[in-house]
Length: 133
Image 1 (cartoon, rainbow, N blue to C red):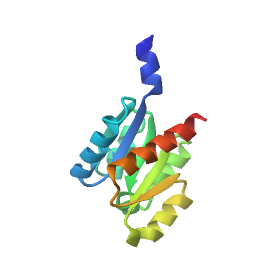
Image 2: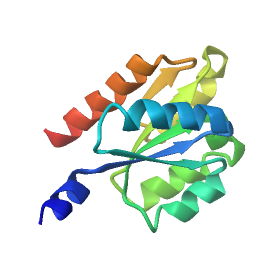
Image 3: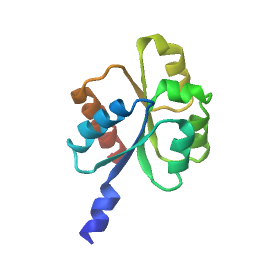
């Protein structure tokens, strides 16, 4: 019974980023911060889309260039599936136009790169807390 409670409260986080190092840093930062966080990595939108039917993701942390690369098809698919995945976009200041488009397409939030470990943890914690209320 306790196992099911842990599974139910677990927050699966998909990190969509072309850089393995970034994904590993985010994974270590989040999983070491909270035992309920379980991170997965995809390095392109097609790989990310293939994971959605198998894993109920609470969050998608997406590099804006990965979303823009497929013309925001992944964002569109998430909206059409009406899944409850919270999309948070990471972008550099020079990518403001794409960030704005992602927000218009349903992204719940964004962060400016580079992001500190403490800021990343706070961002996910804040969205986790607001999802529970």
